[in-house]
Image: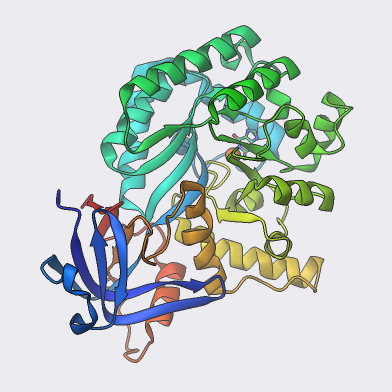
Length: 430
Ligand code: GUN
Ligand code: FE
């Protein structure tokens, strides 16, 4: 649909506050030039100026904001669901690095990324932040495909100049120059859905000299950055050895201007073992946390203290972290986040209350959406991303469920069920 002004009718749910859902049965959601004009309970309430817009009738279906996956590795989608009986560093060395090395072959990358983009398009995700690999050509192939898909994404060519095999390592100069030429190339392409993001893999993969240069690029251009932080105990110990002057892991990024701060957008995956000091710096610098419970469980990293992040007022969203995580479904990640928060409360710290369903929903929508600006809500002024969910495949004798109960059930049991319709910034993808 090219006209980006219309009205959607359906059973509409979005977050009123982080703790509370707002549900409107047979409601009307206004889209004006790709931006939400708000939700109304009846046709009569709709402001005059929108009355002539086309009405798309999804009566009886749930309509929710599109979800954001704040951290995913596109090249790892090929091996999701296998090789998870290892901890992080072994998993990287034995499986991830050899597999990512194959993306030097652009034909392989094309085949793999076609499957990835085709599959993520069908999910409830409308926006995501993705790592590719160190390879510029393969990264641009991925960016072109995502641009074409209509999904919105930050996509990063990965930087690695140490502690990896020859097949997946650049020299410092190469890594820097390749990053600059990739930025120049992608700048010329005039993408409207895709943005580049600096992507130093993590401190063990990047020398001080490379980090210094990346920090300078941020200073010059204001480009966003994504990386990994305090995921695994062995990794953190190693960072301590590699950066003896850093006070903590996050400080090892911060000293190179790679950890948010005024005008610098940064998202860090995991933060399972972040100290209070590290959390304090993330708060001060506005760093986003990409909470990845599926990955943290699979490769036995631990349970991130998500309630602590919320109490500290951090920017926070959810992430699949495929292939540490096994699923593309951010809905499944919502339920994983709730479940691991219950274990944390029961087994680790009984002052940190488990996540509620509305809180998990908020993190998956507005929480992560905030990395993209005004996204993840149907409140007036937000970019209009919406997914329409069909419950036809959930037969039941229950007939008196509320909208919120229907949504909770859908999120818990839908698995990787495709959504019925998807809109991104007012564009109907299907
Ligand atoms: N840390 C550095 N690289 C990776 C990766 O590919 N996945 C995860 N989960 N952690 C990492
Ligand atoms: Fe990751």
